[in-house]
Length: 132
Image (tube, rainbow, N blue to C red):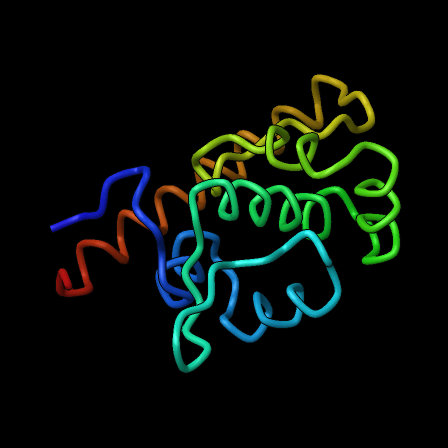
């Protein structure tokens, strides 16, 4: 039975949802004062939905947008935790468009051809490998 969107998450559930290792979540907790999961007896962490949203934003800033830890700390100091909590979609794995250099038609054609080749290779592998 899946948990509802408002349910608290254990560190292992948060780790899976965010796509980062548990030790990374503990490390971020040590570096970012605004990450404060609820702790029960024995130190067991429980992440509220707002904590997950903040962590998803931190993940995006560090892993996709190239911020440093110090940069995220500065952003928090300048804009506040509400900005971080609102800065991430509920789905932690949503991919946002990152502006980059414009691509010409030839580049787009090559990328599409590469994608088609990868999809064909995946289809072949899916047929060969037993389903899990």
